[in-house]
Length: 252
Length: 253
Picture 1 (cartoon, each protein chain N blue to C red):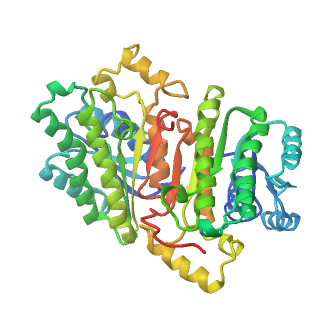
Picture 2: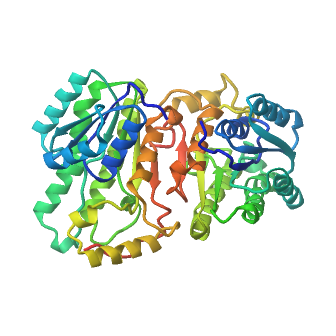
Picture 3: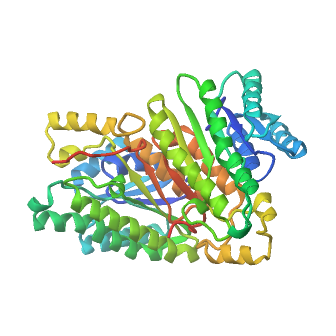
């Protein structure tokens, strides 16, 4: 498999969950991968080791995407290690379930600074490293952008904002052959979701599965495979799209 | 993507997107049956693809008797892994000048034919099979002179999504591929002169984010992705392969 042979990819929030799976799948397709993490060096190193054990190429770089200086450093390290950049995956995200009465300014900024501003910083830095042939940006959004969940007003709003950025930038950057798309995962079994309360056997999990025609929660690999497609030349004419990978949850 | 030992049926497979997709599936190891109305066009396609894994069948998708013929051929193959309901066409005119004949012809091929082909072939789909339909980016905007065509494709999209819901219990995934402005012979078929074609191609290119029209292979790649295990958690979804259509404030006539 070499759909991404010699491409350089930065995956933010790649120490666990969907980001980690995307990093591994990209490396499996021949890409050189920068595994970004904010706090779990151990998690990021595990991803890097899983990649290098199979003969792939990857490094881990710490950086909080909501801090511009960190993002600048992340892309400087990328340039130092691999020289250029072809693919950016904005996977870093903050997710909390809070009733509106309890939403604080702090929670608002926590969501928007990581999920929206962080993506903008990373995209700005990427544009400086993309070569003449163009570039590729994948935003990991959420089905919640189209079908917002109760007690998730902040999270859903950040993902709707991210999708608007996808569409706007597809038009702004298309002439440079920079493609940008969103993936909208459905109920996916990740550490982030578990941390937000969607644990095995929980009421949330039962509700999600009941609303998923394929009758199961998604795995990070389900999302990673769609990301490989969008990052590859197979999707050369696809830009500005929001693609649901949700077992049918958001198809109806 | 590997489709070895998979049986694929593509309606409207002798030219354009259907033909490019048939070629791609054959290259990926599948056995493919393509249908079309025109025996000569099918023969030409078969000559070009030149593979023992390709079968052709003259079948007009708008005729229930022809769909029955297709069903017999599919039954004889034993099982069906991928069904690509692609046959369709457009005839463009303002609402006030659209004839009943053109209205019926488009709905009979694009909607009735697709619906009953799906209905008759559902029993032959294996567990885990994949069904794809060709809709159009035209359902996403209000293209003047495309009222009937766009309406047929909107119908295709909702039928597809309902089919995804109905067939999910058998692990059959059903998805929509919506091409934007792809360079096939549809403009000639719709009666465009070479000058009109060139002018319209320019308009279409400038209306896409990537500033170009697409080619049938780029749609085929999306179909193969959705049909493959790489898309195992994707159902009821539409993928627009349209170069990022920005706006189409223009007329087709």
